[in-house]
Amino acid sequence: MVPEKKDRIEISVIVPIYRVEVFLPACIDSILKQTFRNIEVILVDDGSDDGCPAICDAAAEKDTRVQVIHQENQGLSAARNTGIDAAKGEYIAFVDSDDTIEPTMLESMLERIRQDGSEMALCNYRYVDERGKEIKERAGESPIVRDEVICREQAMDMLCIEKSWYYITAWNKLYARRLFEHIRFPVGKRNEDVFVAHEFYWACERISVLKEPLYHYVWREGSIMRSKPTVKMLDAADGWFECCRFALDKKIDKLAVRGYNGAISEISSAWHILNRQDREIRCTLQSYRKKSAAILPTLMRLNGFSSDKMKWMLFARSPRLYERAKQAKRNALRD
Image (cartoon, rainbow, N blue to C red; front, side, top):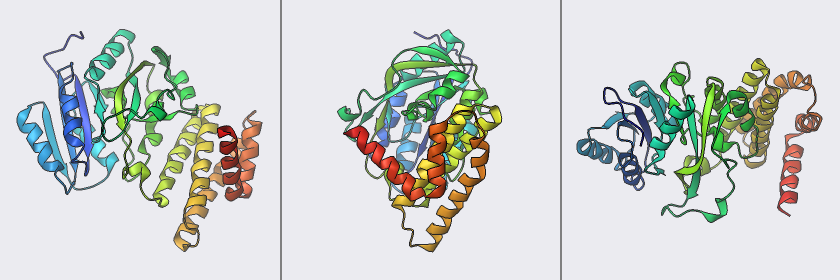
């Protein structure tokens, strides 16, 4: 049992909300049933036009730990940032409004932070369907296989692995409040976590890792991540370019390569999926090709990474050929 401080709020849980009235009650309920009670729950209604505003207000009437902020629709990052600005806790956690968490999630992560002297804790998560049932096909794919404490250099390495999303996502973590002194989520961008994950880790001396899946990520149709492809899918490329530039500045070559590979992979996917007959889309794709070309000479001067450099040259020649080679490799791995 983690001792609770009574003189101040210890954890602020921020929930950005938009059009999720079916899922929101279960989300709020899972937070309010936490075994660690000294929390505030900040529900940021981002201009929902369904039943979410009323659900939020009802929750605040029932539990004094709930604070509701209603704002015009500005997107997920802006809603999170609003919550950060309002937070009073020593630590901050995020829960997406269609997800749920285990009753012991906050207590377990805070306990590890105190034991390890960490600035951040991250836990495993499991994929569930809209009824809350675990998706067996996704079970066992997590790279988080042990409880451990890692340093920021090790965390940077984790951003380079194939299943790096377990380390990138904002919502399976507990952050020391001080980490947000100079970091905010990028407003108007999708894949917002890619823009900032490396900054959070770099600001930490120690990060606690919990192998237990304490967060339930609801895999559902109609979510932002699986909506109709548009040029907004290229936001992920911008995030990876940010990561690449950050790593080059800090001389973390492996992460710089990961960032660039992530960016050109997103660009080549967009090149394949989006309608290049549309003049505006074609111009946007070309602008991203130029972005990749501008940073390439610096990357080519890095020592090693010969196989990556061959891929970069293929992309520079033709994003379509690069995408075909990428798909062929994926098919070969499946076989």
